Image (tube, rainbow, N blue to C red):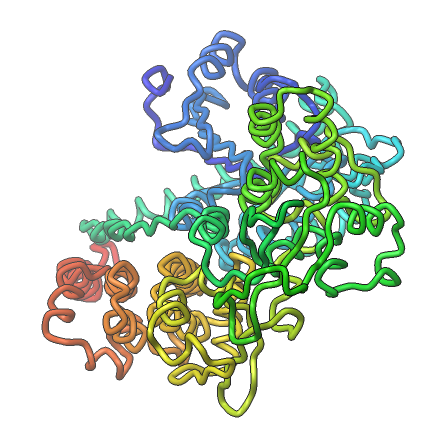
Length: 620
């Protein structure tokens, strides 16, 4: 399509952000705002509109679609349509260049998709404002669709509120904050597209062309006078890309069951034979039945007779002397013996525990495993019903359909409880960390499952293996709490770059590589989002971060920080910390610096020339 455009230096660049669909529609691409406008605009001939829509391409970047056409005779129109906001998270430089090169920005959302509007308002409008950097680029906010009046979905598993609409006053307020023009398009009809949206867009296009024409005349006069073109500033090198490490939260807990480490529960059959070993903390994290069994909750706390009845009919805690004395267990005491009253359930208990430890969401796989052991469909159904009762949330009715609906749920989130409930609490705690004069309770099973260093510490010949109180050195209490929170929840949210670096150091100390990657990505994201003025005035020492990253074997982060210093050479070269770079680091920064020394020399020569007597206008 680009080859059909008439050669002409004048062009208009439009960047459209956002998704105007409400999330429930299955319309094809031709129902989008930009697609419809380009196909119906009176500025574009029918033949050309068909060509540009048929040849729309992703230009090697799946985040946006690029359209090109001729308008006003021979003016080049380039439109980048970005329906996904991922471009800000995946490639900040590309999104910044898109916004910086735009003549007009269009922000679009569906009035029936509040979550999309809230994301625009809270996360991305501030980023667009920062990227515009006080430039006077016209912005159009387009609220698309007729507001629906359905009653909101009451399903507890539904994460979307179909009855929640974005009001016109909210859109107008957002437009005021951006200094934008607000439009409501009730449909993508000829009236709203051609005369309403198209009229406003084309008005700004004409304004942009007039401004460019004026600037072009000034440049021509300047060139006639000076006779020398200014040097062209090259683009900075692309920053290294850091890839995150996939979560292994499920497999960590499943391996805990397989390895039988830190066992504090042993299940027995009716004939007193040992069936399987387990851990209170994991069982209680997914089931109120086990909370009752191990005295984490009392019947008064549950107030659900079906759960209480399940606990009483299926299990019994037995500490009679008929059981052999075991040397296994934590410093808190030997494992708890649990008698399983139902023989069929006991026969399948190993598979049921594997299901629970794997996240309690692979329901169909559990059905298949039980069917292999119990040939009678009636027996299979009875066992599955008991599993549903164990996993039941108080006050709610569980069904097979409900269990299957959780197959895509997060680990250990089938019930209202999870390992997060036991983070930094004394409930079931079997180890106490002493740090900076304070105490932090924890659970050996979680620590051993999630951290290899902790596993070696508590299962080896170290003194911690048999100690209830364990001192911690070389890390602050807040940092260690954040570290433990990651082990329990598989997530963390540092409050600052310095806290993220402290957490990275702690993760390196305990060899938790995924947490190191999370901290690295947080530091990089925060530094990337800092505008130049803030970067120049901040007291944060990037060179100090570089030193710590190298010392603690964070090679990816240290390489990225060197590129970051080189890309912002004019800022960092003026800071005292720049002198602390080693000779090798200084050589790397000088080689990859932006702007390059060659460009700065050419710029100085150009400025000297235009200020000299040789370039004064002959007429003057």
